[in-house]
Length: 474
Image 1 (cartoon, rainbow, N blue to C red):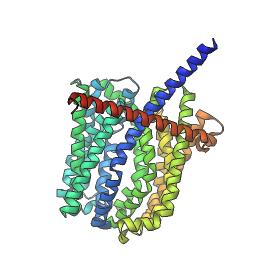
Image 2 (cartoon, helix red, strand yellow):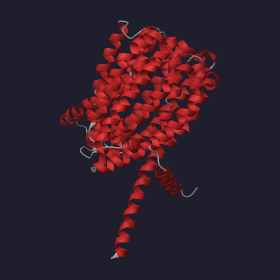
Image 3 (tube, one colour):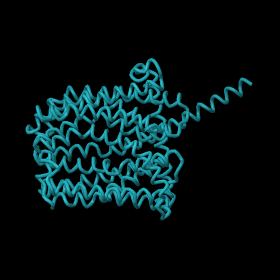
Image 4 (cartoon, rainbow, N blue to C red):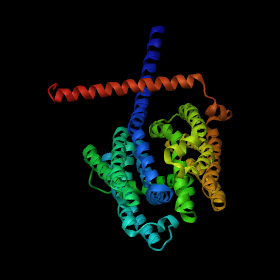
């Protein structure tokens, strides 16, 4: 009897280790693809920024802001709803891909018209006034494809096709780097070259996403009105949080583009790019965490997983933030040039907010993946309200430094509200649950990474063996 129990325990432990290794391999796959291009993207980004200077860098930051923030604003959470129902097993990717594409494209078309009206009437701020129709028109024209491909990519994410989505993202990043080198560094096209690099990379990645979905799923050529309504009903709650999150992330830059100068926006965008580096680890983990939480019905298991992931996030992000704060003063001007020295105090004021954002990054994913997107939206709305109250007077008073201070206050408010809501799951001791890093956490993380690396190596070996078999061993 004892032997049977021991065997059952061993089997259960092996099953858990395998699942942990599978999840870790997904995280490592995401991390590996990002790190492949990270050094190259940093070098190219620095060289392009040095060549553009603060003013043109600010105008380019505005264009990037329109594409990133606009895609979230005008899809109304539709893509998030599609992803949730696919990951929860309530919709099949084959049956909802056309619905996702057409819904995303239609919403993007509405957004493109509204952006064009705002640009034509000078309503988009000082940075937009630097741009001509020749420069900004293609951004507007490509917007429907951007939102449609975003919705399709969420189908892939819901189906846990992380390797595919990361391959597409790597392709997008790589093509943008190549176009930046060709257009800005070699071609001398300046701001126009940077804008065209952004547009071309987005169009190509959008087309690649469409091709991947067609090849993988052979989707049904039908629009599911019921699913679209359900996705919007779920998504609109996520949308409020996503919009608030984007606003928390970029409301500062939006206000600088409206009331500040392009030069101020350029200095600020460099500081933000540096400050957000400690959040990279979280971006590797949260896509996998969302699907894991969505598939887990046990509340206690969700809470345990959330606490452990957050403690590891706190450890990694905290160490990175401390190192960046200490190295910032010599590092920023050394990389970007003396013209960007004023970005350093902005960086220092922004880093406390990044520490708070690391908490929100994990807990927001836990809330949304657990089918309670309203909680994630609530935390983001708290941050947005704080940002709305503090940012405008601070930006008007001290420009980029005010934007950094207001953003940090907003991030901290969102994180505090997330902790208070998470307390419902774990009760008393929520701070210990989230922040007391234990040796067992580090061992668990190291073990998960080892299991994941082993799984990745075995997968890579199998793929290589199959390719050699197809080629006759040559």
